[in-house]
Image 1 (cartoon, rainbow, N blue to C red):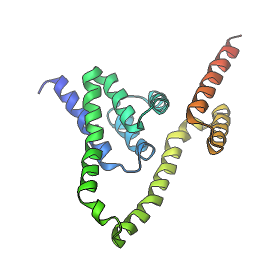
Image 2: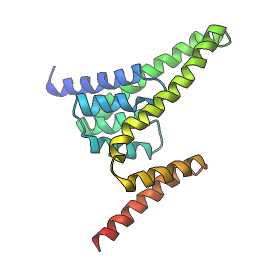
Image 3: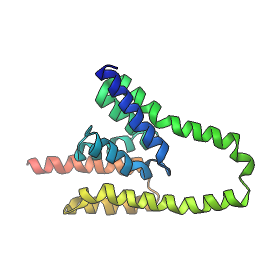
Image 4: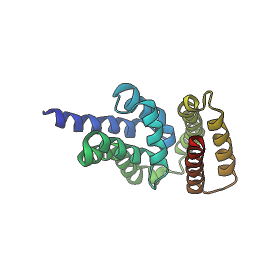
Length: 182
């Protein structure tokens, strides 16, 4: 196996693990994605990872899928993006097929209902923990980031569309950059 083939295989297997062993959607996956991409494989540094999350969150699509495509493309171009994408979506695809084929007939069974009643609050906890793990290093000792975080959180809770919040703070960031140069 050539170095290039090993890299494609590595992208596929890393994102296959991410897709297979994380539940709760993109936000719950963030700590595992970060560990694999930044800590273990050093494909991105901490700042690049945060920028990647900002970009992949601001475009349509699932966060984990967008991140897989972005990282795969950065590492090995279009082919790397395709291998990363295949890895991250394959587990979900197979799980959904299994659910449709077998569990749909059992969805009202007390054990299945009880399992899902336990899973839901667990997912919320994973999402909250993810927010702290990803956000804490960026917010630490950065009053401007803390203010932006609080305002964005309030706007989101008030129902302002995510796209508008991202565009607003992107423009604000550009504006404050230009103010600093004068």
